[in-house]
Amino acid sequence: MFNTNTITRFQELETPFYYYDLDVLRRTLAACKEASSKYGFHVHYAMKANFNPKVLDMIQSFGFGADCVSGNEVKAAIEHGFGKENVVFAGVGKSDKEINLALDADIFCFNAESVQELFIINDLAKAKNKTAKIAIRINPNVDAHTHHYITTGLEENKFGINTFQLNDVAETLRKCANLQFLGIHFHIGSQITDMEVYKSLCLRINEIQDWFEDHGFAVKVLNTGGGLGVDYHHPDTNGVSEFENYFKVFHDFLKVKPGQEVHFELGRALVAQSASLISRVLYVKNGIKKNFLILDAGMTELIRPMLYQAFHLIQNLSRSEAKSQDLKYDVVGPICESTDCFQKDVDLPESFRGDLIAVRTAGAYGEVMASGYNLRDRVGSIYSE
Image (cartoon, rainbow, N blue to C red; front, top):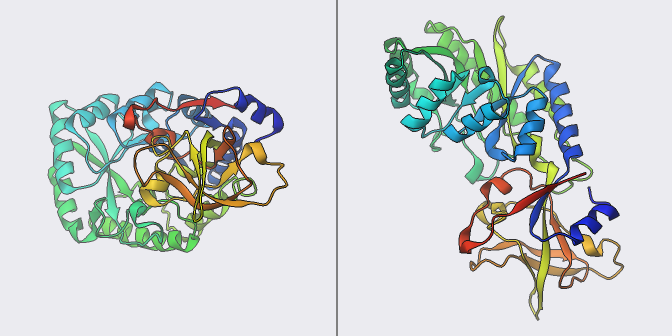
């Protein structure tokens, strides 16, 4: 990702910033498109992962739909050319304002996450003399075997409708004349790399769609969600996720009936490897027990390591050719919080003030989660030429 010309360019720029390698993004999108098209699957991009304008424009150019979790994401999707017929709106806490915005936009589908939400969408649609298309987000109680902060498919999670509530869902759908039932929706978590998890999800989807069919509801859409992980440890050798294996699992184990559509909502797998956070060493504090590299980027620029102990490969770009023995550093940021640490005991060449540091695989949940805490300037972004 970083050749000599790129590093020379970085040296002339003020840090920190996000660097987007658009060629990596393009290759990733092409791989996903090819693998999903083989089976006629529909892919929606999960906009919460990254809504950088150039990133959105490129994703839209490949013909993907948009998966949104706020009213502003719905607006951004439509403004960036994602057709309203390809926009889905999920989220456990949609406000009336956001629902009305999506109704006015005539989006493809609401992914509804509670019985109460069904009544609210129905009432708001009735007031506009509209019919809202609905998929029911169901909690399948499938363990994604990932970090508990990014697991969403268990009964103790706040997301979705539990299976013991399905009779209430059926009764509500029959009462709500301004709702059109399209299908069922699932999302069990994020950063999933074990394909057996998706096999288990398929088997649960098969059971649940049979339940709806048995109760008189035709299931047109099977929305399996997303969550496919990426390789944070080897971004250069495994820069593109296992799209072929991922989609093949659903082709092999999902019971797709004639006329049904299968939809996916991928975020991280499409954008994570396309960006790195570029920072500089402000200070080096060497001690007896610990050596610290204090960067000019911190949790205000990339909060994932501090929020849920996420790993990101850290590289010293200024010392990539160094022959010196590696030292162990705690790589930390400048924020007045003890948790402001990217990683402890990182093996790096002996490092010095002014060295350029890259925090890799930061294209998902990086720039979008940046904050102005400590009244810091918002992080900017640059792009490959």
